[in-house]
Image (cartoon, rainbow, N blue to C red; front, side):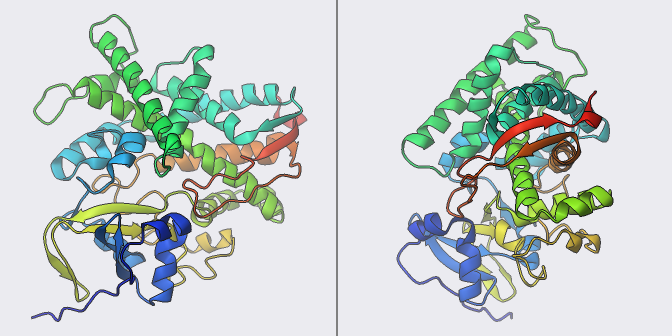
Length: 422
């Protein structure tokens, strides 16, 4: 019979405030202080097991042991993911729904997105060159919003773009917020869901025509396991789950600007070594904070490494901490893209957008699109435009999720480089 060890405990009645105060580093800090990759805590009055590292990630993404249903707090469902979204499903239902996303994340479709995004970059660069300064984060949200809608097959009217961008942006900017900000995020989601539901109904009734090969058409007419069309509300949620992550890439692109500014010597390597671009992008995704944790619940009671997990227990996987784990990464708090030259993808040591296999786990199906969109953005920032970074507060706080620089990155005197003229 296997010996059962007591899980180390973060002593205290409740640690919700500590989690809010320390943000991305809450679990990592406890893992260091308790000298363990697993510990027990209490969040919002409930017991939770926190864990991090490669082995923990491998366990966490074992779908025979964990489920996502009822694991994520409702406030995050109501703002970030949406009700009955693919992120809340398990087993056969999850795999079937995820096929809807995997079917449109092909190399061909990703290249189509990049072609659309290039045109938006060119238009934006023309406009930026006429302005004294721009708030780059807001501009990138707008650019990606336009590209995302065009990609799914429903180009927005110019006058509607700013509203759509703000609705989508609020979804990933407010899930952890309290008070008015949270309710703004929830309200923005409700507004966009209603718009999408009306559009879906019109497409199904042939009142609005969309191309049959478009992503929008595929989603609108996707069938559930029983062979029936998905309900209108669910389709609206899942269409937004294509749009929202694309607009959220703006956070990563902001981090690219920050990395080029904070580590100027990287520019020389990027210009002289084409293969270095991929290493740089991976390090941006590892180094800077985006996703703090992933949540699941134990399906049934089991033991792992001598520790007992009881059915229904909430488990939080340390995404940020695993990407900064000193047992995995040498000098994890240093920006070193070269580390990825020898890195072998084992699906569990580097998990900025989840771990495991795309087809079977909750790893983000749009990860490759994210990487390619970041590479395209780096190409423009490095070789197709010139800009100045005026004095500003680009500090990112670990207690703000997502961690967006206070200034949102201001660029001044943006100019097109002559060799980039199209």
